[in-house]
Image 1 (cartoon, rainbow, N blue to C red):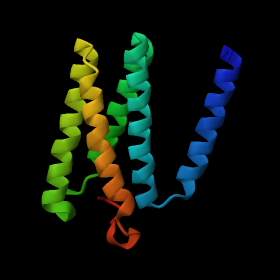
Image 2 (image 1 turned 30 degrees about the vertical axis):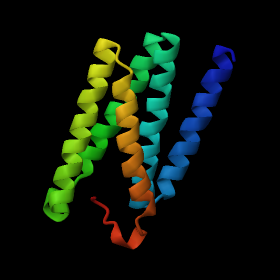
Image 3 (image 1 turned 120 degrees about the horizontal axis):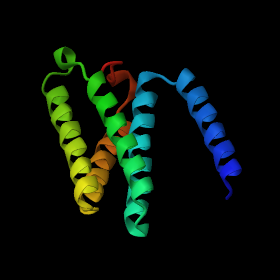
Length: 135
């Protein structure tokens, strides 16, 4: 795929994501964020496999930014212990991704992928009416 096609595909993907996000409720938005983390972790793993430091670094950075965003939405007053545990988990994942990139250790990416995959699965199965906007 040439650079022009990649650019067009990226632009289409951004428009599609923005359109979906505009009409999504908070539960769906969190699901989209988890999917974004997982997608970027797959890209990072691919970067490790192919020795592509640029793709690896970009994907890890994007995953970390999404995790920072998820941390910022936690409502510690309403969420109590669950919010505190999620905050610790997101912080741990961010640190593991930093470790992975800094020391070329792909196993940290796999660990974060498993952890976020489990949280994503649990979140997806949660009834929407049980989820507050600030989870």
